[in-house]
Image (cartoon, rainbow, N blue to C red; front, top):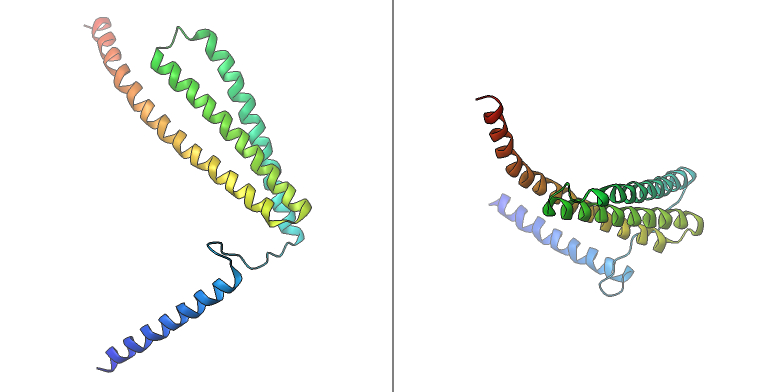
Length: 167
């Protein structure tokens, strides 16, 4: 019976702690917005965030350039690809360009937050980066599905070719 009493007592104390924590959080927040405690920025954090911002800007620019060149090389040869393949390749290139722009903007916001020490810039950078990663995950799913569809279409052609060449 004492185990049951201990569990009930611990449940009541955890409920009172949860209520106190909720009241404490409400005192620091307004409405549906919660706040973090102040973030201390030392020299190492500045260097790391500045590098992260610079790296994201470089990755964003190179992604945009590579995808734009890929699209320019792909468009003149559109007859070599079927309609489905062309649509998939163009949509993937456009999504990569959008991801590159979002990476660049995120890196710019990170670097701006280091210069101004405003948390809103860091928040903006994280939101933009989150959107870019969401698009990137969608892109990975599209690549996997389109690869499966292309494989299903190409495998019978290869089998038929082998049967013709090696009867």
